[in-house]
Image (cartoon, rainbow, N blue to C red):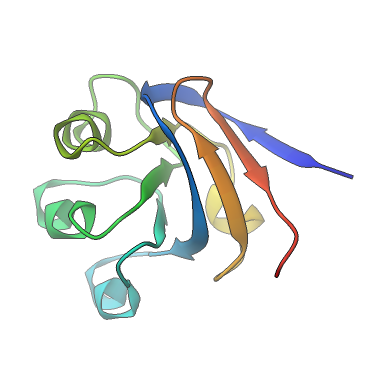
Length: 110
């Protein structure tokens, strides 16, 4: 069964990678290049992670939020307002992100 989460399409593009739930600055050290950033929201302190992220998924926000604007500046897909993303996406869970459609598809682990 394919599980697809939906949210607001905030920055176009498609990619896939391991979901990396980040709850706050104390977790920043766990984030690696190519990870999909999964968080509740972002603010300017989170901007360095965007340079390493392959995509961004947040639980809150819309097309004018910090996460959306910075994702577009970095040219990475973003899907925002994905309800319970921090609960539904496990650390390392492979996901496909479509920032134009606003979808996050859970993939089978390799």
